[in-house]
Amino acid sequence: MKDDRHLLGILFLVFIFDVWLYVSIVSFYFSPDLKTYFLSVGQGDATLLVAPGGKRFLIDGGPGKRTAGELGNILPPWARRIDVILVTHPQSDHFAGFIDVLKTYRVSYVFGNGDESDTQTFEVFKKTLREKDLNSIALRAGDVLNFSQIDMFVLSPKDDNEVKNAKDKNDPGVVMRVEFAGKSFLFTADVPKEILKRIPEKFLVADILKVPHHGSKTGLDDALMEKIRPSVSVIEVGKNNYGHPKKEILDILLAHTNQIFRTDKERPVIILNPSGVMNVTKF
Ligand SMILES: [Zn+2]
Image (cartoon, rainbow, N blue to C red):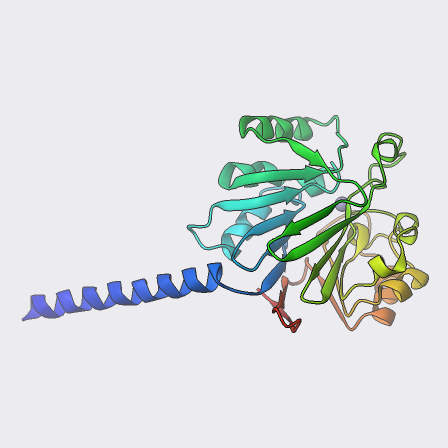
């Protein structure tokens, strides 16, 4: 009798586990929503887009091992694939974390801005790509990526010359507009405001802004914010010696945005459903 109850107990636990697994798989792969996670990775950028149907696009890899750890908290244990990664520009706070990500996750496509860096860490990153048989494809303004019902418009850099002749590695970072269900994101890498200002207003206006350059004062001003008019702004930032985010940028954001998040204090996730309803929460 005791053995029977023991067996029933085990069967019940197996049943509960199966139900949990089934609900997790269905809700992950069959969700019609776009979920955008702003990862807390220290001083650097890493944003994960999970498209309707479960495909994953990681914009920047953050500065180190925390990115793979954050992905492990978001993605279910069986999901060992990131479909696309994008290195907006080759500075370590944007690509170094990809080294561990590439060891843990199967990646199908790599995009970048075509620039290189002569650092040891970038050599390791390139070696890891070679080992995985991956080539980085350079994005240019005018390129459009269609990713599982999501439209991605590349707005900068303009061309190869602009990347080759850049005085500052931040200038030719990949700026991208992401559209889904009538809502839009503006991903700005670390580019200065002069680069953003040459983009036509119809591409700048966005519901959600990834604040340029961790809140450096080079990234924004009032005139630019009047064009972007975001309802949500996210500063991807960690402990740093630059004073990021700068007080003048926080003041500008306060004047022009309803909600401001910073990834050193919280982990925002923006969930967009196919009707365009936006739910801003934390993970
Ligand atoms: Zn940066």
